[in-house]
Image (cartoon, rainbow over all chains, first blue to last red):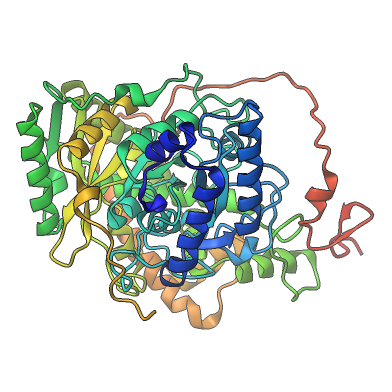
Length: 493
Length: 95
């Protein structure tokens, strides 16, 4: 048995029966990382020694019947924009290359300190989560396990690639405009963006505060439901987090969609969507019908407005959030200065990469006097429009079904020269963030190049249970993971 | 709206960023491209719609105004590019 092939719920079963120890699991993963990291480059920071030490401690504590979390001893990978005490949190930026967080973010605290999972390391991403290919990392390019000459998507590209390559059993990502769902789609794994406010953002390095959410990237839907149950919950350190009762999302997994009302918006199946993606989605729709769901065409004509609105709002908020990086208290400081102002300007100009600077400038532009009304204010009105259009549809349907990404994984350099073209690859995912709704991406087939195609299911506010069940039912009746595996083709290694 | 070179430099200054001479044309081109696209918000049917700032109903979330001591000062200061006597050090500001 290859331990790293197992899902977390399968691992837990074996742990509970004492068929396996946390040390054995951790060692298996570290060996797998040794083997695959030269191909994939998913990690910014590896924690091999700490991980083994921690696994031994947890095995011992279990023997002594100490009170540990239900998922104690299970390894996890964490996107490198979540603060981890005593361990570097770089955001894949030169700006934070040597930043060591003095505290754990709330979600990190939950999984590592309360649940006692084992941190295998910090995962690569687009710098400050700005990008859709992970090519914007200051440190390295992460490669897609299905074809090493292609990108894993982004910005949580390290997290998605590591899960797909069995280098971690599951991972945490963050999603501002699709950064969990799009890489999950491109890497053939499951990615969930929760409702805005369901999961605390405390300790998540802020990109666009009104859009950011942390969520799980997993091998299957059940693991997604498990990890969501562990990280959701109110946190007084995040005033936008919502105080609703905690729940176990695995109880929503019924393997039954009879009578479920699914809306399919024709606008999300337009010219910009690759034909093979459309065909795979059409097959998924037929599958849902066969399983007893009621599938209907609907109109949700907001994709283009939402994308424009997204880039205005996200950049505006980023320009403000990233104002804190000034080379004084933490982060990169230039060597080239005389005055305080020199420190600000040169540290920022040298510490941030091109895309981050581009977005700060765009954000500053749309907030500056003369353009505020034409762009920022207008975008906030469009945000209301997007919310309203979703609300109308979600009165009629339990879930909305769309592609996750208009295209499958593209090659390195294909889009990195043209920022707008890169932005267009977020067309199917951003509207969900603009409205604050939950969305999940699950694999639903391969294209002719053998690259995974993702399906996105969007639900109403806090109805994660509904989309998880719909995803689970599809998975149980199609078995993507059993049928297809990443091939690691196309590499130089 | 056409973005002029001077305007870009002004915006960069507001953002405490310096754009080198050889990058200016590329930034101008990218910015123009993105703004042309972003302009679709001005074609959206938003007449009479209010602005959305956040997507959930939280409004004025208060907590008790209590001081909580963060004890691990060392870990805060270890990230400082320059420090002296437990303080962040910067160049002289007043002559």
